[in-house]
Image (cartoon, rainbow, N blue to C red; front, side, top):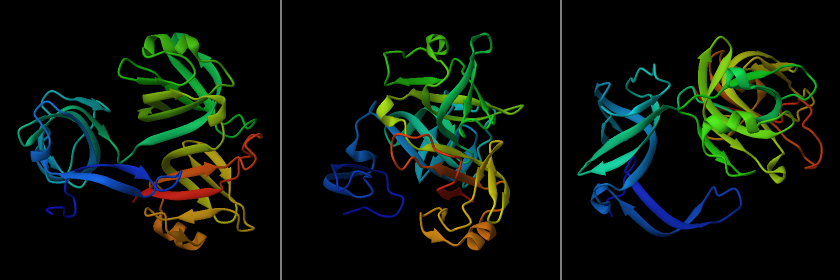
Length: 275
């Protein structure tokens, strides 16, 4: 009872498949009454009401962001913007410790091309051998999730990266063609499979190519490229082009079907993430 659209809930259960698109719930708790003060929570959703940059609601949940770290630091909160909030509960209010802009969220899973420790940066090459690279910058706010070793400090990460390593990066546009990393994960060899590039659509040519973050992927005009809307519903290529003008947040996946070969620069899946 009491569960309605946009309600804040905690669900415990088991996944019905490896992709975990459905959870068989053993317990569902709704509302802040089911949480205690100082409980840590993470909420991802839409700003449903905005008083000012420090006081707003996400999915109807009151948020106090007066002491929150913001990613990016220049984020300008507006109504209907998608954000991720981390914080603790205080009565009926979520006291935010971190606010992240999800409306232009950049995500990349690819192989490191080169590392420049002096600049706290490295380059990713999503299409192997193409020379098309994406520069990623590490700063003090970067979170580290290390499956290869035990690194947790961003100051130690840059000297441990090397060309050929496969990493997952989440971040935001840092200007001048760079991505500032909010989170970096060094991935184990078993995870080295599909290349993912998510960012704003820069160009698309029917039956030819698509460009995101300065990297061009081939569209398989024989029909092997799958197009999807924001709900993962299938689209024709023409429907996708109509629904996703330049500037739309999209995700490109270049799959490794064998698990042993490098992806070949063909966009196997192209999905609209946000309009």
